[in-house]
Amino acid sequence: MMNPRRTFLWAGIAGTALLAGCAGPQISDYAKQTPTLELDHYFNGRIIAHGVFQKRDGTVARRFTVFMDCHWEGNQGVLDEHFTYSDGSKERRIWRLTKHADGRYTGRADDVVGEATGQTSGNAFRWNYTLRLPVDGSVYEVQFDDWMFLMDERVMLNRATMSKFGIRLGEVLLSFSKV
Image (cartoon, rainbow, N blue to C red; front, side, top):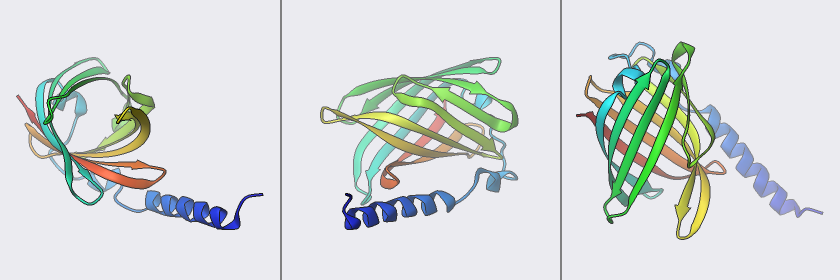
């Protein structure tokens, strides 16, 4: 038999996660914002990004630079990302994206669980996926809720919230620039 206190705790966590999922901005809120973001145009060619990972308390835990080579053929895109972290470690992720109707996108990468889904509207793009994240010899599956905003034809800003079981673990902040 399950402990009533434990049941109450899990019900509270589930309820909080459910309410948090309903709150906040929707991608349609940005429909009239310009310049209009077309991912297959922006993520085409060479891009450099600078970013930080901040813990829940706001402490910067990691800084990094990403060099990206991107190209599209029809509705299929490849984003080849090369990460260099401030501690000298390196990582590579290759996204394979598909553009669908109505600004919707899906994507896959080797360290992504299942399929990522996203949508553009106006100058914004919302991208959701689960990432296998190695930490101190273990691998954790964490959820990312990415919001990207096109500032002009060269610059895009990205804020991604990382969570597990609906509990916020931290944020990734990025600035993309077309080279």
